[in-house]
Image (cartoon, rainbow, N blue to C red):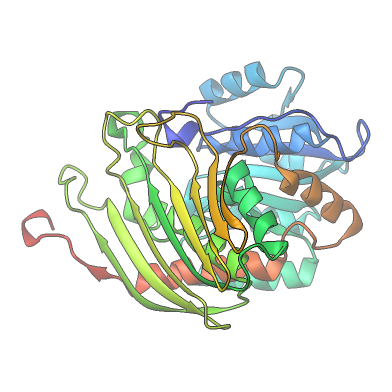
Length: 362
């Protein structure tokens, strides 16, 4: 796993299968984003059998097969879609193409697990909602900054145990390192990646809904900008937003592509969660100036001040939960309503955002 490039963030953990060999067969289609490795790692560690892979790029396929020996190369996406053994398809397509693939997957009676962001337009979202309702198949999303970060998992456990009371506010920052020369062309094309709030902002909104137990929210204010990347005029390197949930909880988040070269990881992601009886701070990927290790959790409650470094101690329970949900048609790992609401809010934040890009760069 790369600590310098978020596009290749793919955590691994000890294998904890929730099913037996061959009981849950999956496949991978569309390897456009490196998150496909994190998605497959999590599922395979939870017991899934990765049977197939398909992508039109032979270089991407070769690297994927080298990582997962034994996976079979499909001649086409249709060969995978028509395989009755395959229960779920994981995909990391170009963002604008993710919904089209998802519709095909659901129409073939299989569950879909896509990288974030799941949609780039509200029209795509509404079509997927309709298709999920008709087919009863799952359209799940890899919100890696919560699902594949042990400190974020641990924070959820603390909150559900009542450690800080009722959550009142969530503040999130999601800086990323750009590494522009290593990025594909589509990464800088607005129609294809959807905008910064739609893309990496989706992580932040999903976390807010989860930690605050909101079922809905309103976007009060949002902004985007291209402050420092005039070579890529359709790119947004800064975005922020303020939301209020249906239970009165609030959120502010900022996402950006300004991680300095001196940081030992791809981004100093942090989350602060305030409750009625305490607060939690997550230093997800680094504790700058102190430790380049990850998953630092600080919290204060009625009993005192606490700190725990939880890397390697918590694991990633979402993936096993997703497999069991797919088998039993339950919604314990994540509800479909939660997925679609997080997607809806990041799309709305993007649509209504004020553009702060200096006139000289537009």
